[in-house]
Image (cartoon, rainbow, N blue to C red; front, side):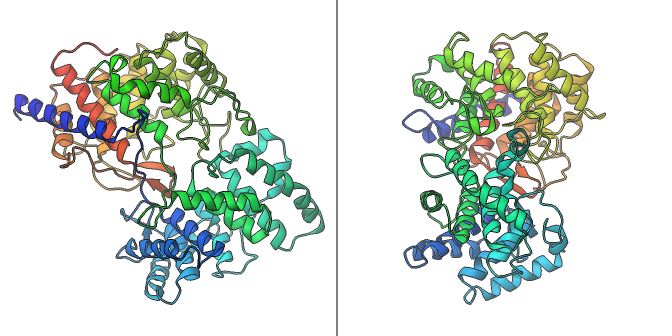
Length: 567
């Protein structure tokens, strides 16, 4: 390929992408993304509004029904993210339940097609909980929703123990983000399912404590975790139990505020803090963002959104950042990302917010040297040690001058070395397969002056070996979608460039060309469902795709034009 032509094309692509990004900036300096619409969130929102008042919410209920019917795939199933491939038995079971209760007659054909899809895909055995397995993922709540909507016997529900609120925090907090749904549905089961005397007594003792705990973690907008899915579980559980009227109304208000114009709901309202930080990271490859007038408000917005008080329900200290406010919880990933961005924006280590944030990260380190998101030393569900999160935290600490030999960083690097696979790859909890984690590993080793180590070499070799023939990433996948994606191509390209790969190397040029070729007329890139809440609950995010693609192009152009070394 002609190098000059590719560089010209990349410059034009970057210019369009920067324009698109600034066009999306809000007046206060922040950005907001679009998460994909979610079948499970839409099904739960639809059931909640229909049960609250089908006449008052008739138009909203009808629009949600229309969305479900329009997004049912040709095979009869529903997908995890919009109508993206593939259909999921778990998501299909939620869509079926919602239509069965709210629009059974008019949606008869859609319901029957969904039943056929579930049967043909062994849904009764694939969906956790339907065959008596212990709940492991969100679809494990599916039997409870089927019981509520009359699709199975009411007593055939996975046990959601409201008594969990009575055990010490260090034990109950291990389920972290699942706990609100467990408690709300547990209150319902305690009041509606026949149980022995001892459990009935424990349930009565636990119920007021569980309700108070839910009140404590609710945001001022009525949301919990900025998650319509959680709001749906809370509303449906407490309404069936006939308790917690204030929490029911708060959850209903949140659902009304977060329903989209097309009738759907996203799995989370948005990731506004995350994508604001990602936007600054991308722009930082093209300009000195600390002096950019358009980003002064961004700096202040990020500083305002720091948690300046402890999140005591999970023993989380003050000083972290969440993914969105007011009800997104402070967590390690975004605290690390925001701190790094504040350094780019000129906020010094002496600033009280930075000092508090660094202390927060050091406090949150696990015993094995890693970092999880919310609760220390957990191994359950998604709140477990994560290589990607650990790498981001180490990079943030290095950004503010914490030496690589410091105890926290040394232990973090030791954790990464221990969990790197023999082929050089490393997994990431929050994104599918290994491209994300391995890219972050190469980045953090480079930041710590270990870019020449065997561990870095193995990560670099794995990334190069797993480039697809079309120039993108990944070469192969365990979780959908098929083919190369903008997100994974951008992560791998940036990491290889940061790790010292020649910007004129064939693999690098093919990746740049892949990104340039796939930019659309709006100056952005198509997002793919690589974001991972659980193996069976993925999402797409337009600004994750956009900002990381722009950042990778910016790093390549910087190296090609000799605009300085990596900072």
